[in-house]
Length: 124
Image (cartoon, rainbow, N blue to C red; front, side, top):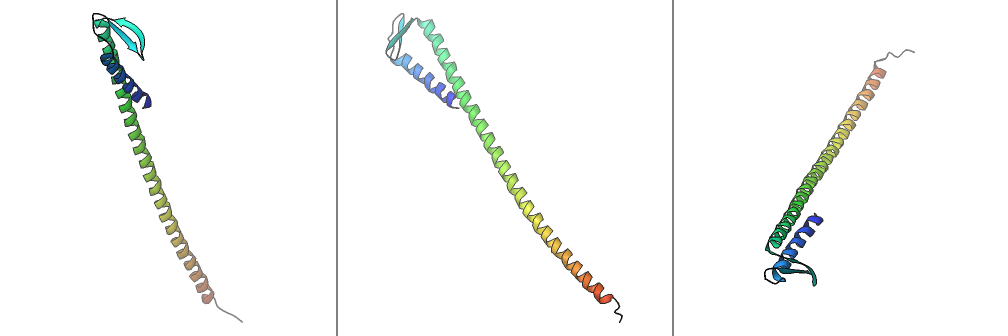
């Protein structure tokens, strides 16, 4: 994403600099940062503009792809958190159910033991 933003900014800056700071005439002197780079005619400048436009489009494409991927990852992370919370609630519900079932089983065993004790014949 950062590379895409840098490409967009640089291509816009190059386009603005090409229009604003270079003089007219049959051949134009191209300068960058105050330094003479080259002399170019209209065809070369036109092709340079196309290249700058392509660099700009690639930068915008990179930014959009990175944004889509980031949104997809965030959605996936939210879904994973939701699943973890659901699993935690299910675990707690099952633990409570198990605890209740164990209490019922323990009461039944105590009742059964007491009942057998009373059912036995006592001989002396």
